[in-house]
Image 1 (cartoon, rainbow, N blue to C red):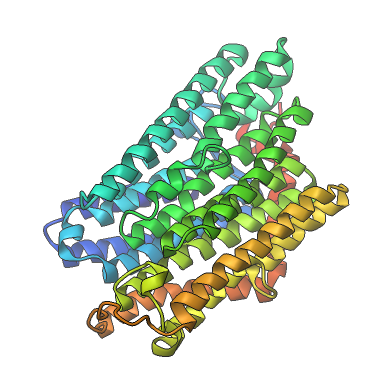
Image 2: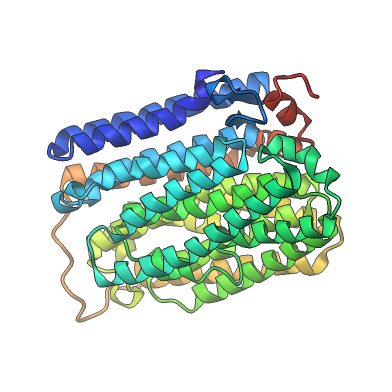
Length: 501
């Protein structure tokens, strides 16, 4: 088995353990965390290059052959998601060093960040459903710990909603796993691709598919299962909010993509029709919720919900172009959304709050920050030539190709309302003068704070521009990933050792 398959999980878990051991030495802990994040990025890029060159990779833990052992698999989708997770993790680690005080660092933020990344990478690379459940639980434990660090009332309130809904999702997921194993005798995803076709009671199989849809739908925050997200994502520290917004719901979307292209494809007319309705309603409710908010991070939280709808839309349409759009949208959105939360943190640091009515004058006082907000905000809204334009264009083109004109109209309308929300933030927080009677802003940043806070934001904004200006390589990558999802023969052959039986 290629060491690159296990490296992302080994690196993240090892870094987490070493950071815990260095909890009483903050400088050493920060150094270990940074080196671990850089190493994760290095091995994830190496994994993507290997997959790009040789095709899907698979390995069996403990040398137990599939489908009896634990399979690790990396196709183009899994590899690129691990790379994007590593980029987001590195940016968050650096940003947290500038944001967090000694009290928060001593509570274990850095080690828990790497535990969260371990769960994310494990979920992307696992090849069987039970271990997908295990990595979801690793993510849930780490994210709950990060959510409650500090012990403030709003954090605890948000954490209760977050955990309660995610535990319901876990019970549904585990119940679905048990039923599916009872029908097929396997949980290896490549093996399930063939075994589900042999199930006599296809109606029961469709019911199990709906259980998975609901479980992953809760974790993705789709309509009507999303209300835990805007109730919790604005409560922790900004660094934690950023990595949550970038990665957690996307693991749910990844799980939907994987299972509803590889396993649950025997009743596409039913399951994907549900997904189409869910996608449209998710887009609309999310963007309307954002339009009603007046707090920076609450607006961004509702927009997570709205943008998840676009990703589900590509899976629901289930054409090659639509699935390409979903993969492209995933890559674009993780970078953009994490960056917007980072920007909100800097705005809070320089102005003292996040309520739009208390902000103002940021363009005049901090023009570079205004530029760094403009790039991801209007990429989210779909302005050309930013990355969000290409992602939305591909999905709308796929809708029009199927003559789904109402769906295309919904996607366009939600994009216009996204512009409204981003413009509201721009006008009130950046363009208008600071309101009279507002509290005096905090003292200026130190040079160290400025480098640590602005550096990750500038890097992610540059990446957003690069994807928008040179979309060709990213589109080709999304095209390969979509091709493997719709025709999983290479994935299955890799898991079975290339024998294909």
